[in-house]
Structure formats: C-alpha cells, structure tokens
Image 1 (cartoon, rainbow, N blue to C red):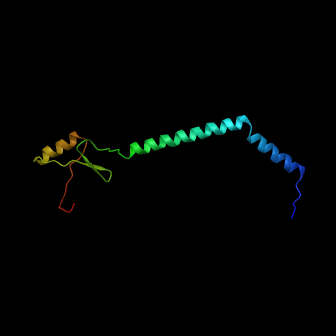
Image 2: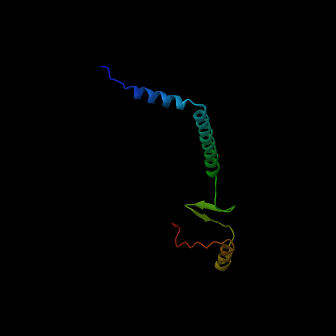
Image 3: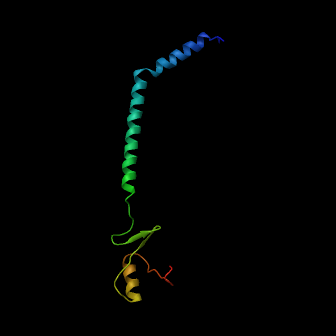
Length: 99
C-alpha cells in the first residue's frame, strides 16, 4: 500500500539529514566521542587503583571497615590501652575465644 507523503515531510527530512552532515555537527560529535573515551579511560584507571586501597596503617589488618592490630608482645592492660590511644584507636575487649 502506498502512503501519501506531503512535500513538507520530504523537505523536513532532507533538512534534518543535511544538518546532521554539516561540519559543525561532525566536529561536535567527534569532540563528544573523544570526551567519552577519555572519561571511560580515567574511570578504568581510578577503579583499578581503588581496588588495592587499604585504609589501615601498615602492620594492621582490615576487616569489615575496621582496622585491627595483633601484637605478639605481652603488655599490661594500661600499656596496651596507651598504645592504642597513641594510634588513635581503642583496645578491643574480647570476652571469649569465639569473639
């Protein structure tokens, strides 16, 4: 079946396709393409570096958004608490081995 097309539809479609092929639109689409590529590359680099991020100090163990320091030295409760305070931390109190 033939569908009648008005001359206005033909002129509109021709002007849109001609406008999209103009050098200005080609330049804009090229700039946007390069910008998108650069942003994706930057995002890839950031995500790669972020995966190795460790917020804990050297020698400390990170677990569930907390940092733990396990010492082999025997110290009194006061000495241990003072050590933790010097590291801007608090002494962990465990009531049984399951904790």
